[in-house]
Length: 33
Image (tube, rainbow, N blue to C red):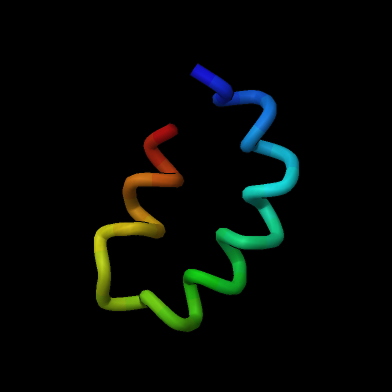
């Protein structure tokens, strides 16, 4: 369970995914993690 590991690099991907997959449940899922 690489939560902390993906927490740092995912931050950049999360911000980018947020704009692309704004209507998807991906940003919500990453926020929950």
